Image 1 (cartoon, helix red, strand yellow):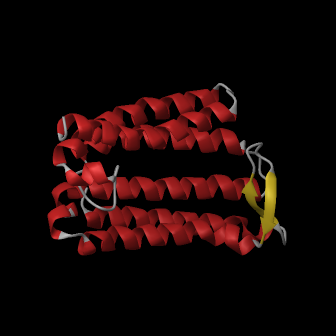
Image 2 (cartoon, one colour):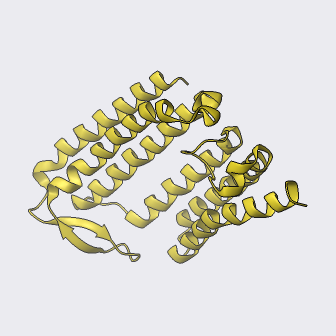
Length: 213
C-alpha cells in the first residue's frame, strides 16, 4: 500500500465517521457522556459536539501525520525504507479511531452496546494485527518501540520488534478472547499494560546481550 492509497482509505473512513455523527446528532441530549469508568458507566459529561466530532477530527489529524511525517523524518531514519508497512499501519490506527468513534457514539446515543466488551475486542484485534507487522518496521523516530537502545542499534531494533510482534500478536488474541468470554476487565487491562511495558525492558536486555556483552 502506498501513502496515497492509505490517505484515500483514511479519507473514506473520515467521511464515514462524519456521516455517522450526522445520523445520530439529533438523537443526542444536551449533555452526553464524555468518559466512562472501568465499570463501563459514564463518569464525566459534556457537550454533544465533542462526542460528535472528536473522532472525525482525529481521523483528519492522522491523515495529516501520514502525509507529513515522511517529510520531516531525518535522512538516516527515513520512513521510505518501509513505506508500505508505514502506510498500512497508519491506516490501521485511523481505522481503530473510526471504529472506537462508532462504538462510543453509539453508547453516547443510548443505543444498546456493551462498551467495555467491544472496546477490548477491538483493541485486542488491533494489537494482534499490529504485532504481525512489527517485524517490518525499520528504525525511525515516529513508529515502533523507540527507546535509546533500539535507536542506537539496528540489530537491537530488529530483534526487539520481532519479539514484540509475537508478544502483541498473542497478547491481542488473548485480550479479545477474554473480553468475549466475559473475563474481568482488570485482567485484560493488566495484559495490555504488560504488553506496553515489556518491549521497553526487552530492548534494554537485548542491547546488553547484542551490543554490550
